[in-house]
Image (cartoon, rainbow, N blue to C red; front, side):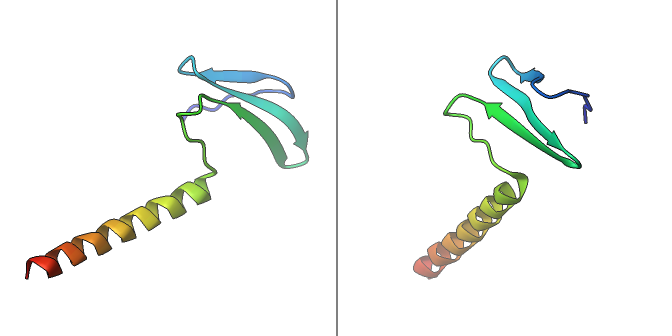
Length: 71
């Protein structure tokens, strides 16, 4: 993991396409802004993990249904 220090209104750029900017710092909370192309999805990690779990459950269920149809 790369750890960087940034101040309010400072940014970093990822792969020439994604810009992350520190918008506000209040106590232990940091507000960031992310500019990325529309084709690159950006999720909070907890939402991303929920999507992954839902996709896995769907794939597992679909596979089970396909096997039932074969029998």
